[in-house]
Image (cartoon, rainbow, N blue to C red; front, side, top):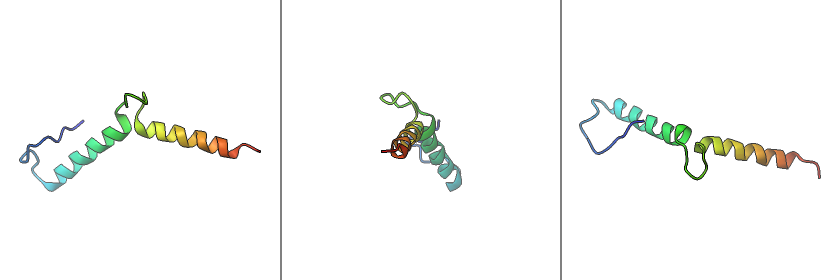
Length: 60
């Protein structure tokens, strides 16, 4: 994971800064284990939508 910190001269180009921001957001949403959920947020979201879809497809 990239810690962006407050080191303004850390990145040589704007592209490097954008890539570091992208990597940090990607880690936060896709790999970081949320302490309450016990899984990454995107995995929880997918699981939730699968369960919701299964409930909606059940015949009445």
